[in-house]
Image 1 (cartoon, rainbow, N blue to C red):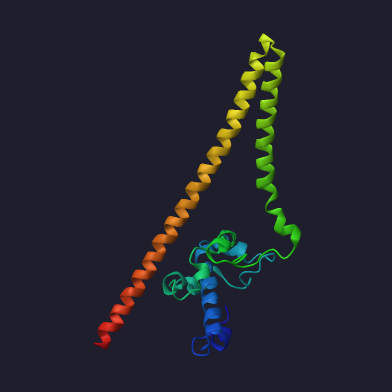
Image 2 (image 1 turned 90 degrees about the horizontal axis):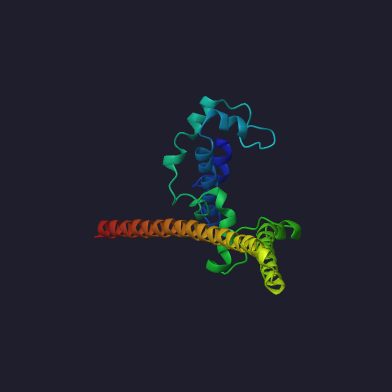
Amino acid sequence: MSYAFWRDYLSGYTLSDERGKRIRQAALGYLRTYHHLIQYESDLRIAQDRSLCLVPTDITWEQFCNFSSDLGSSIDDRDASPRYSYGEIRLTRLNLYAPLLLGRSHFQRVEYQYGSYFARFYGPLLFVFGIASVVLSGLEVIVSVEDGGAGWMGATVWVSVTAIVASCTLLLTLGLLLVYKVAREWRFAIRDRRRRLEERAAGRAVVDNSMV
């Protein structure tokens, strides 16, 4: 938030190489997040917390409003780094798609220890193992009841089948929900990509007409 720092190190007049351009775009994208994340005075107080240190504590709400009032409208997507086209909170999603779309192991590395890297797999694996355990236990009960041949065990079979169906239904529902959310994100990404291509084509057409 220092204008002197921006003028001396991030100004477009002093950044001529490609690396400097990327740094300036990254700074603009990061700066634009302040406009979207701090919407109310209570948000500013959270950002000024000593554990976060996002905003200096001596800045008032009125000063911050004057500072951020034009950040949302004056910083276009083409001025900011593509990293911020879909929001700061989607870095994990970008890292998920990086091997498929970019041919890289990650988009931006966030885990520098093996423990934190493998920790993100614990929850999904435990969930899958839990569902599999319920299904296998239910099948084991059904097989044992059929071998025993006791008539009063019908209720036990019904409970086992219900547990299996409920577990599979839960797994299917969560899977469909995941597919729905991913499809919505891809739809947004494709529409945004088309919009960018159309804007780029329109800009080239304007340049060509001006040259003529």
